Amino acid sequence: MVICRCGFQTVIRTSHTDANPGRQFHCCPRQGTRGCGFVAWVIPPICPMCSELLAKLDRTTSMNEDVGRKLFAEKKKTESSIFHKLDEVFHIHNDQVIRCN
Ligand SMILES: [Zn+2]
Image (cartoon, rainbow, N blue to C red):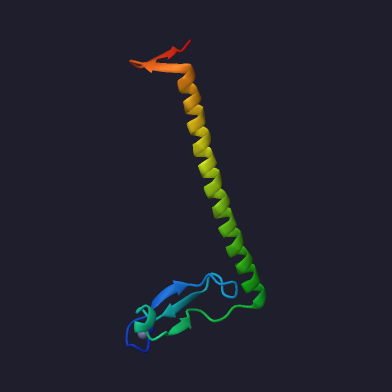
């Protein structure tokens, strides 16, 4: 258990900076000016090469999440368009599919 200067048990957060991506750190549970500003790494520093690789991985993961969100939105748009076109061609009446025109 790690105690901050206020006397509270610290909370663990994750860094998303380029210098320390994915590293967890203890910090004061009180936010802003009410807190004491206590910060300490959960595990010791890693080598520069690992730090650089983790930074790249963090950026790549973030980019992939953006691409995933765009693809999902595109898929929904395409599905909506297809259903709209099907509605124009077919008409469903009492569970029977009737072709329009
Ligand atoms: Zn504190």
